[in-house]
Image (tube, rainbow, N blue to C red; front, side, top):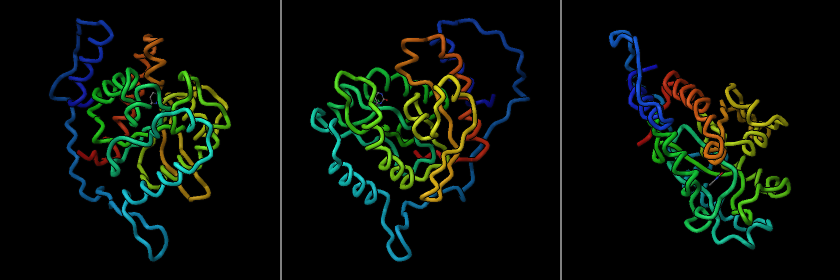
Length: 250
Ligand code: URA
């Protein structure tokens, strides 16, 4: 474990209710990671074709207009479209399931109880909303917070793929089963998908991106025993970020 994880490690264990810690790790053996790789800086522009260069912000606005014109039953009952939060230039993109009641009110993903837990989980590995980009598989709240059905997911899926293409992150993190199964084209549940290295592939757009999956924070609230497994998954994500010198934009 590198030095910056120690504080979050202790906080995480306090969070699990564990207050005493015995450790024999020698400080001198700990590695301090310094990210000085300027070459990792990304352009804020994307090429649409040989001549047209548009900013990510313009591309997201175009995407938003297309999504607003989608023919999806969820649109009729939702208050707001919930598209994204975070930093367009982030190298890590999180994809959840669907907005809940709070997200529907505020028009932003993960702002309710599950979002608070997700923020806490991110803070354990020194991530925060301004260092990541976050969206959902489905852009409107399913009534009563039910799981989105296959039709709703398949209507939104091509736009999530476009979304990924625009942000072009170095790492995708699928939050929960719906995102993991839909984007990895897997029939397996999150218990089997998490804890492994995956590649998200979009052949149409010639895109291949490293991907990981974690338990959904709403599931963790119901099954706190899985918080330990999630800590391991978060450390693996942290390891990927450090070893690939991924720029974490402030
Ligand atoms: N759960 C999700 O998957 N996404 C949200 O935005 C909120 C809760």
